[in-house]
Length: 104
Image 1 (cartoon, rainbow, N blue to C red):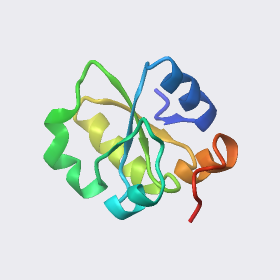
Image 2 (cartoon, rainbow, N blue to C red; image 1 turned 135 degrees about the vertical axis):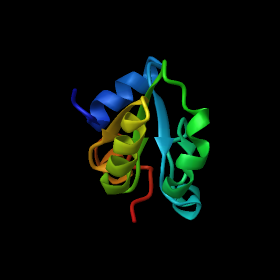
Image 3 (cartoon, rainbow, N blue to C red; image 1 turned 60 degrees about the vertical axis):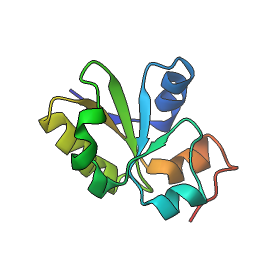
Image 4 (tube, rainbow, N blue to C red; image 1 turned 45 degrees about the vertical axis):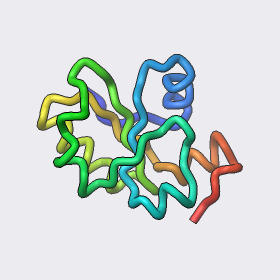
């Protein structure tokens, strides 16, 4: 199964509320810019918060460019969670979907 999702598909899934967006960037990065519907769980905190993930839901995992989120997706999938890496991260979201999101 494909473990990646484009920002265009993510936008549609967020509108239909068929996916939950988790932002795994550090808190300072999240505070600088974020997608309003996302929940911030920094990458290093994911194992501690694993019980908060529902095995009956789908998750989109986002970071700055897609590197950290890819690692988190692998970890979640290994623990039975349906998760997809957002290709290009929040930087790609800013370029293609919402240019009001600050780039860094």
